[in-house]
Length: 263
Length: 65
Image (tube, rainbow over all chains, first blue to last red; front, side, top):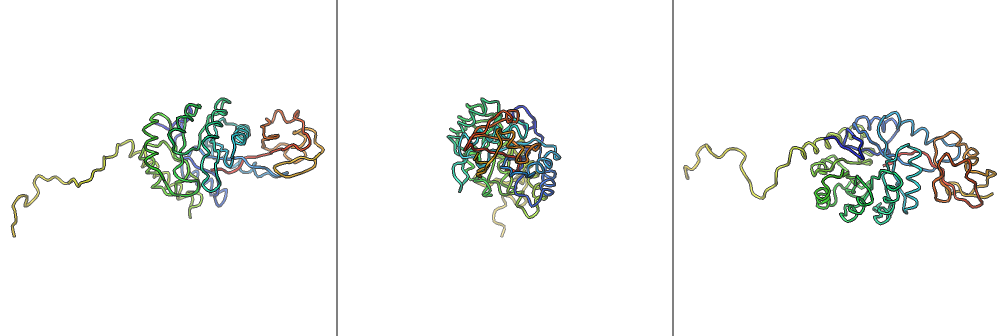
C-alpha cells in the first residue's frame, strides 16, 4: 500500500529536508537521487531588496515534489501559528510541519504548546504534521486535536544518534496502527532508518545525515535503499528472535549421527 | 515614524504595510507578512495601517529541515 498523508498518496517513504547542502545543485541532485516526493522547507526573514527567497523557491519548484513547510525555531504557540499562516500563503499548501521548540540544546519539542498550536491550526484548516516526542499521552492529545499524522523524534535534531528509545517507538506503532507515523529527526545512518522501517514506521524524515555526508547524492540513494529494504522486511514479516540456537540445516541424515564416540 | 522590521529599528514614511513592502523593494517578490505577531495576508497589506512602534515581520521561502 502506498504512503498516504491526509488523503494524498506519496510514492516515496523518504521525506527530505532542504537545508545544509553544500550547494543548490547538490540539493537538487540529492533530492532526485533519493526519489523523495516530499521535501521540507521553511520561512525566514527577508532583507530589504533581497531576492534569496525567490531563488530558493525556483529550485524547489523545479524539483516537482510536494512541500511541507515547517515552523522551525518557534518557541511559543503564537509564533508557531503565525509562522504557519505565513508559510501557507508563501507555499500555497495547508500542510505544516509543526515545531514548537522547548530548548536550544536539545531542540526538544515543547509538547504543551505543540498540542495547543495543533488544535488552533487544525481548526483553521491546516493539515498538521507535528514534530513530537515519542510520548503516548502527547500522541493521543495530538490525535484528539485533529492530527492525522504523527512524527516522533528518533533523537535530537541533527544529532545523528538514531532511535534513542526504540521501545517507545514500537509501542507507539502498536498503539496507533492506522495513523501514518514518521520518524522525524535524529537519524544518522541508513541502518537507523531501516530499523525504524522494520518496526513498521511509515516514513522517515531526515536532513543532516544526507546534507552533511561526504557525498550527499550517494548518501541520498543509500537512505532510499535502506528505507525500501526496511519497509519490504516489515511487509514480509520478520522472524521472532529466540535465545537458543536452532539448526537451519536438517538434522535428519546428518553423517555419523548417533554413532557414539568413534575414536 | 519609527518601527521595527524583522527585529531592526527603522524610520518609514509608509502609511500601510503594502507601502512599506514596496519601499523595501519587496514589491513583486514572494513574501509573507505579520504585524505585531499576527499574520497579514497579501490581500490585506494595502489596507493594513502601520502605527508607531509596530513590529513587522517580512519573510520569504527558505531551506528547512
